[in-house]
Amino acid sequence: MGITTADPRLLDLTRLVSRAGRPFTGIDRVEYAYLDRLLREPGPLFGLVRSSLGYLLLDRAGCADLKRRIDGHDWPAPDRLSRLRRLAPGRAGAETALRRVALARCLPRGLRRMLRAHLPAGMHYLNIGHTNLTDRVLSALRSVPGLRIAVLLHDTIPLDYPDYQGPGITERFHGFLLRMGRFADLVICNSAQTERDMRRHLDPLGLRPGSVVAHLGIDVPRPGEAPQGPWTGQRYFVVLGTIEPRKNHALLLDLWEGGAPLPEEAATERAGPFFEYLQKDEGAEPHLLICGARGWNNDDVFARLDRGIPRVHELPGLEDGQIAALLAESAGLLFPSHAEGYGLPPMEAAALGVPVLAGDLPVLREVLGDIPVYASVSDRYLWAQNITRMAEDRRADPDSETRRSTAWQPPGWEAHFKTVLTLI
Image (cartoon, rainbow, N blue to C red; front, side, top):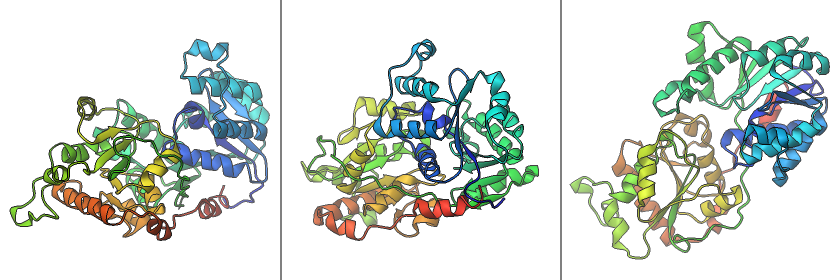
């Protein structure tokens, strides 16, 4: 499957368009990175978008227009068609803009005809966002002579942890994984752990697509202006990610609400009960900043946040630069997630020189090694002890210059694309 980088490529951009106007998630960042890089590569480039009305096919100029609008948050007012569909404002504006510059567009039943009419032979289709890999799309793609399919697999979490998923997600992901296993010529795995998980699910079914491991690049946001609040000038911790059961915000709320009693023999002043630590230093207690939108299947956590917990603050919808600024001055990133496909927040924090306390996940050890402090998410005492220590460390050394000078060097996109672009 090794080819020159001048071969034509078709990048599925459905996810980016569907989430236009909203803060990027980890998967959004990866799809955007592919858009940015492929626009700088030689050879024909096309984009495929499943819109609310059918499909849009973009040429290189259309792909560049989408990137420009994402970069500038430049979405036009929705046209009549988008208003009729009652879409979210960002998506409505994105679909309006792309209809104006599309090379071609069609209703669902016309997808095969549109692709055959406009795509050259030898095309490589890339699906980066786990979106739009449907039977209809695959059938239409296979009608293009010589077309190859590459899919980037982020994780198999919906199958491994179904209790943490919203309604229908596990079933939809199961279908996605089967289609990927049957039709992908290449699966790009973001980690060796993801590749092992894929094989664990697909090998028993006799599905063995070719695969390659390529760690994702980490784009460390430049710190902007940090939001102000009761935490300003105080010690605080950040937890970053969608508020969903898998991310395990409940552990941190337990600690900030009531603390974790320690074994009697460990009850020292430095490692005392966390709730006592929170109360012993009036006016200097550590705060907890929850940066992320509310997700699904997490009513108990939402109810606790709505009731209010002292020193706990919910900050959804922040820009990357705002989050980076908060992280840079924090006592640390807390990451008690039960499972991750890659785990971008700890990597971004480590690249800023920020201490990280995380659940003991294989993918974090694979990429970050011994940089974080790891603690079992079942051990509230250990979490309380480490948070106490990190807060005291921040008080003892509030200077962030030392952090920046010793920051971890993250994987770059250059290495990722050097691996991938020789294959697709």
